[in-house]
Length: 250
Image (cartoon, rainbow, N blue to C red; front, top):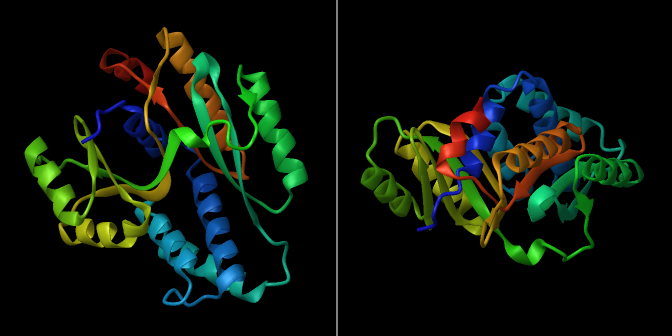
């Protein structure tokens, strides 16, 4: 099992209390609309749509919002096509970043991402400059709900997961990207409180920065990037010591 860097849970908790939840739902809706335009509105034949809807449900996006996004995608196929883009770069302290975007205008998105990186102490890398440090996997954040560490590990393994990171009252569960729906279904059957569910990039090794101020700069950069409507998610190989967690969550 993987050692825990605390990054995934810190990222989740910051998002959970984020006042900009409407922006999160907007990004999820965009993802659904794009999936419908590409493959139609039938989840049984459009796996990308099924993934997008499952991710929206895990984020507690209201059912009405999901249905509106599906109808918009199905009824407005002449609208601007969305393009999936991945940018690679570095944050302060040499922390590697994978920046997943969904945009209808790459000529807007690329300069915006580059500007944000440079303004906040990072830089944009070339394709392949950091992607070799990451693996594409299923990622689930669940509430412990009083379960002991051994119980969470057993629950995750029975669901078909591969790795678990436990941090107090939360746990991050990792598995093969191809097994996303299977693992999610098994976790739901176990009646866990699902806080987030997605496929994304997990680093092979984490980078320990020299001080907490650098960690704050990295998290500020990630938050600023994710404020961009075109940016879906940002993944980092940041290692956060236990003693910094409380201050970083403040």
